[in-house]
Amino acid sequence: MEKLAIHGGVPVKTTAFGTGKRFGEPELTQLREALEQNTLFYWHGEKVKALTKKFAGMYGMKHCVATSSGTASIHVALGACGVTEGDEVITSPVTDIGTVIGILYQNAIPVFADIDPHTYGMDPESFADRITDKTKAVVVVHLAGNPSDMDPILEIARKRNIFVIEDCAQSYLCRYKGRLAGTMGHFGCFSTNDYKHISTGDGGMVVTNDDELYRTAFRFADKNYDRLADTVSETRAISYIAPNYRMTELQGAVGIAQLDRLEKICSVRNRYGDTITKGITGLNGIYPHGVGEGNECSYWFYLMRVIESEAGVGPGEFGAALAAEGIPNGVGYADCVYKNPLFTEKSAYRGTHSPFDSPYYGREIEYKPGLCPVAESVNETAIRFSVSEFYTERDIADIAGAIRKVAAHYAG
Image (tube, rainbow, N blue to C red; front, side):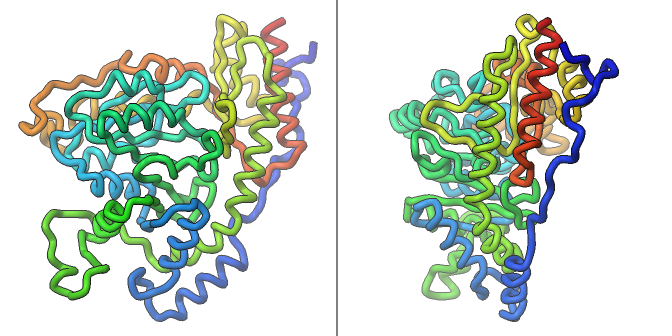
């Protein structure tokens, strides 16, 4: 048996991971054209308009609204669906805080459904169990490039008249039974933050096929101004508040060039992630990043689970040994969102307990450990490491080889 690097042996990974440039001449060309317009405002320029048209076309959707962030995208979708004070919105506890910010901004109540232990998508049964007469929408998080099990979720939501919003911030061009994530619900929401598959620094996109929802979302992203109206007085006839989440022409320009890279980025990540899975399948106590049959994952990162009772080692020790072999990693993705003080102390708005004590809600809700046991177990047992389109085939072989080496040591 090979001696682990953490014990003085030779590490598996002895070369640097592959790197590359995310931006280049195509982005510079688009930026130059944007500046030559003599305006950077989306409504007067052409770049954001071109980006939304191109993005909608890529996803086969009728409409697209550009926003200032992925967080903004979800908020726009919630606002367009009419989510308001006293409503409940069900979502996943394993996600970025940006998923729930829009719910709270609408003075609605986040409710958390548990997840699948291997794909990390929302568990349809848990979703069904969390529905009440207050449920207005569900935000389904497609985590790490992997689609949730959408058919039962969509069917449950249809029967209960619940809006379905897909959070695709981490999941460009992933597919559920051949359908692109983001195209199955009422809205698909995307992020172009610098840490996503493609980047405009910050930014987001919202897609829908519903004409009325599109018009409401378009307004909601722009202070509720109706720029599609015929007169100025109609444009500025504001009946309720909405935020300013407009994308600039500079972001739009970069986004146009980035979209040309997206299919290759996701294709390479899909191949690399699936190759890692193939290379580590069958190891005792090691559960690869699960992808449902007929689905495709674009691996924003890779999340595998280490079950100590089966593997002979816990995720912390396994991760330390893996790092010594030259594979950087971390335990879990992020602690369950409901463990944040803003939930446990009900302090979303400083100095108050709003919206949790809203008279429009009129109920007690409690966020405590054990609320979503599978999600908590995933965060305690999972190891996360990067997948990049700039990695080489050797890098991917080294990742799988290092995992096999460490697993074999502890199994022995």
